[in-house]
Structures are given as structure tokens and as C-alpha cells.
Image 1 (tube, rainbow, N blue to C red):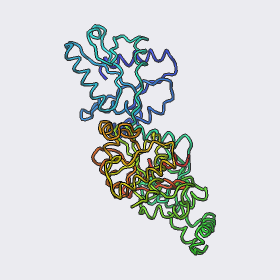
Image 2 (tube, rainbow, N blue to C red; image 1 turned 90 degrees about the vertical axis):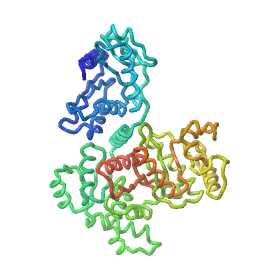
Image 3 (cartoon, rainbow, N blue to C red; image 1 turned 135 degrees about the vertical axis):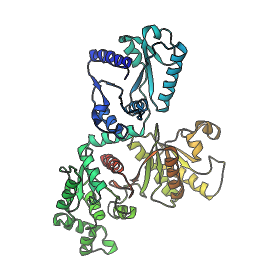
Image 4 (tube, rainbow, N blue to C red; image 1 turned 90 degrees about the horizontal axis):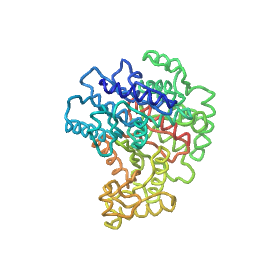
Amino acid sequence: MNDLAHQVSNELATLLEARGGFTRVNPLDSIKGSCPIANLPTAVQAVRDIDSDSVLIDAGEFSVSAIDAFGWNLDLAASTGARGVLALDVEGASESLISAEIHGARARARRHHVTLAAVALPAAIAAQVSVDGLAVLPLPLTEASLAALDAVELPSVVTPLAFQADLIERARADRKRIVLPEPEDDRVLKAAAEVLERQIADVILVGDEATVRARAAELGLNIDAASIVSVDDPAYNEKYAVEFARLREKKGVTVEQARETVKDVSYFGTMMVHMGDADGMVSGAAHTTAHTIVPSFQIIKTAPGVSIVSSIFLMLMKDRVWAFGDCAVNPNPTPEQLADIAVTSARTAAQFGVEPRVAMLSYSTGSSGSGADVEAVIEATHLAREKAPELAIEGPIQFDAAVDADVAATKLPDSPVAGKATVFVFPDLNSGNIGYKAVQRSSGAVAVGPVLQGLNKPVNDLSRGALVEDIVNTVALTAVQAQG
């Protein structure tokens, strides 16, 4: 911070402290000795963990010129829901140069989705500056300055970092037991250690305890709090075998056959969830999608009133969250199944804080097109409205009409969904998979998922290319699903 910024922070701290319930924080304290760019999520979480009526976040200062300090601080502000106060060192600058600098900073703040609440300037200069919609605070700051800041609405954008922090906070609030049946994969062990350290969930690992703990020690990981269960443990194996044989008796499965089946880690982990020994499972880092989810179809089965297991991706855009379904499971859903996918996707989205406005996607909007594919979406939309009349559902609708207010005003001017959709239901797996990857790669969105939905209890699949961060996020969302 420059000298003026230090002055502004100190004066704000004095005023806020007088109110009580105040905390001042330097976000870099949480990541000392670490790369600020890579550890921005840690700094965000450290700020969000503070429980005070008001929090003053000092701007991070970096001695490395390659780091975009202003951008880093803006990203921190956006992801913590903080108002920004601009402090400019403008000694000797002309009024036009000061105005230009304020407008430039404000424009950049908007690109980072930050609400710039005010600019603080020396009193003599503040009297000469006026910026529409932005409070100009003369120094020294007073109670009137705080009142001007209080009058600015808190930002409502949801950045990817903010969404992930919300997810973890919700998981922490009611910790669940999540089984990870692939501890032979170092990424899973690293994720387990992080989940335990951040108290996101209680972790159950499936494997030989001595081997798993030895490998964790080699990696320098603390997994002391994890439970480790072997597939050969007779206390589990026998009761799981008996139950699996009962579930599959119509398929001719005997207890002897079941004893061998439940020694497969995916079946064992799924049985843990089914029998109440775990609240959810995350797998797939070292196994195929089919290996992960087929046991759940056989054992956990679909929730009441749901005809099909499907998936959504939570698409973390720069300033909002969208839900895309079904992009991972069902190749060619029938209209009835598509309706179920729509209703289930809306409910899953709502569970993760996304207000559901459902777009039933097609190559046609309203009555502009025809053909068997359009008719299928029309029927699916009708059935979805019957299933969930309380939901805002529009279809058939093209993607541009679903997200662009100007297009929506032309094509569907009276729709409660067009132009502001949040849940996008693709007509088949081909378009869904292409769609989510196109948005992910072209916009820089973070795709969280696939999140399996429609099961009685949560099981989620990982990409075999999953990063440790992906596994941690999937554990957190599985825990939130388990909360109901």
C-alpha cells in the first residue's frame, strides 16, 4: 500500500473499532512464504472464516513486480463479497488526470466484478473531484465517511472462488462421513489430508491400513484422523455380502458370489453408503466412470419419484454459477426421462445456492422450428411442468435466447426464464458433453462435476485426470448432498 492507502486503512480501522465487533486482517498472513497467486483460495478462506460484524481487509503488498497486485486484491475483494475503497496518491496531479485514473480503476474493478464503493482523497483535492455513482471521501475520514460506505450495497456476484468457499463452509457446518475407496492414488491421499485439515468432512479410506498410512507418511501427509477399512475385514465383508445377495437375489446372486463382489473397492464403498457406515462416496480417480457408478445403480438405486440417474456440471462462470445437465450419463433420454432430468437438475442447483430457472435447450425457440427432436423437448417441458409446477421452466429454447436478454426480448418477451436461465437441460448426451466443454474451454469457466443426481444417497465420480483440488471440491459437494 502507498502512504495514503495506509492512512485510509488506519482511519477506517479507528472508526470501525469504535463500533465494536471489528476485525482487521492482512490476507497475506495466511499464506506467508507461499506464492500469493497460487494461494489466493487460502487467503479468501481466511477472510471468510472471520466472524465479526465488520472486517477491514488491508490490500496485499508484493515485492515481486511480476505479480499483478491490484488484480490480486480485486479478485480477493470479489470472492469475499467486500466493497472496495480506492486510495490514490495524486499529489501534483491535475483534476483531469485524477478523474482519468479513477475511471480506469473503476473500469478494472468492474471487470473483476468488484463493487468500488468510494475513493478517498486529501480534502483539498476531494473538493474538486466528482464521479457519478461513486462516493468521494475527503481525508481525514469521519462517521459520515462510514455512512457513505454503508449506503453502498454489498456485491451479489458469485465468483468461482466464492462458490468453492461457500461449498466448503456448508460442508463444515454439518460434517459427513465420505468414503474414498482409492487411497493407492497419491492424489486421493493428498485430498484426504486436505479435507481433514480443513474439517470439510470425516474421511474413510478403503485399503490396508499399514500400507496406506506408510504411504501417507512418505508423502508427508497427516491422515491420522482418517478411518481406514479393509475389504477383507470380516465385520464388514460378511454383512455386505449378505445384503448384496439379498438386493440381487432376483439376478441369481448367491452369498458366496457376493463375498467376492464386495471385495471390489467400488462395490465395498457403495455398500458402506447403502448400509449407513458412510454418508457418501467419491471415486473414479483410478477407475472408469462405469466402475464407479454401476454399483450405485445396483445397490443404492434411484430416489422415490425419480425414474433416472443423471448428472449436472456446476459451471462456475466469472460472476455466476450455471448448472448443465445431463452431460455425462444418459445418451438419448426419452421425453419422460428428460423431464425428470430437468426437475432433478433444478433441485440439485437449488441445493447448491443457484436459483433455478430451467431452459429446455433445443435448436428451436418457442414455435419457430419443428421436427421430432423439437417435439421431444416440447413434450419433456410439458411433463416437467406437470411434475414441478412451482419451477420456472421454458422450452424449447435456444441457448442464446436463454442467456441473452436482448435476444430473449425478441424471441420470448414474456418468459420468466428467457435471458436469465440458470439451469440448462440438453436434449441428449452428445450436445450436453459438447456444450459444457465448449463453455468451459472458451470462457475459462470452472466445471465442477459431474454431480450424480437422482440416487437415494450420494455417490460421485471423478475424472481420471482429476486434480487434488477437484477431489476436495467433489468431497465437499458430496457432503452437502448428504446433508439433504
